[in-house]
Length: 516
Image (cartoon, rainbow, N blue to C red):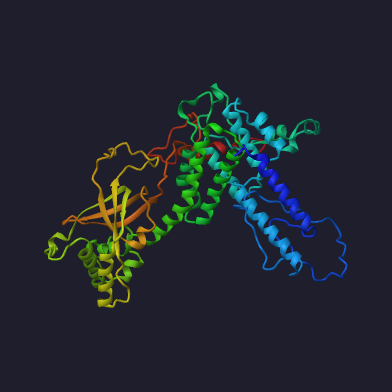
């Protein structure tokens, strides 16, 4: 944190001096080790014109990545090897010392200024966090994608990120620029602001310290809402784009933690960073689950007991490639073997065919409560059956997941849906162990399930899978919101649906205007 800035800085400087004394010739840039030029005798040609722009880091290089060449610089003599080993040791030492890879250690002067001037405890939280947001964006060279993601994250937290017109440095006079400091220029040109006005200038979309009744300071809640709702919609199935969004949020949280912006919310910030780490683990797992579910057993049950729904356009609404590859004989074998191994002890009467009919199909929301994998005895049975049948595609060992019904908030009006009781009994679904390894207790799922007359339930379709930290924030509904404006024109109706559009076109035509 901020309590040991002098120690970290001094260690880094001393280590750099030590490496410079031992090997003064190599110049290390961006973690690269230069290779010695073999053409020592040749004269370097003088470059004409302006030199190229210096390559600057973005601040998102990611966890202080270090690249190593296959051999040390300057050949393989002992001095070069020692210098190379010391340089590698320096990089690894800095990597271990700094928990905040996105920001270099602060100097003593910067630390004193931040502690006593910029982020002192007596300064209001609104001023401190606004200053931190503006400084973070100024110190990071964000591309358009990262900039858009960061703006959406701030908007979800109630900060206005709308681009203000005529606020660039080009519109500031030379006298203003000469007299203003860097902090003044950043404040005049920044787009990230927290509203403080009242009365007619009060905007309901953003946080205002004068109207705090509908807002709370919750770093973990905003991170959970952004990573589980907004970022999933923005990134779609692209895991790389999702990782970019998590990286932006994580770096911002590390920045405000490293600079000790709001120590009163230190625990909340750590919880938000924990959510970022969980997001990088759970979202790829969810993507894999959506690819593999409903699994071998549920696909076999669907093949046997569900009629093909052709839909309004004549296409199958749920049959996929796994159903087409599975014939009815194979489906009966998979379904029967799994029931015999997991649910029916030896000597139990066979379930009659009359009880193997679907009596209910419904779409419900669940939360995973318990995951049970098969023990050694069922695995041995599966292995023996597969060896006996000698199938080209083996029957996969299955376990089970226990779920309980819940209500998932999505922003749609679900006032007619009754609240689910906490004491609601759990339901059991059979899944292959290859799928259970991607599940985690607390994940939310929207499933279309079928219930057989004998009481067995299976999954027909998977609508949605949400991570354990899923949170819906009301601010989600404010994306694209516009204040209503009074209008004298009649509203569209079933008798004249194009009334408003036609009037707009007619009113925009300058009939009788001599200038046209």
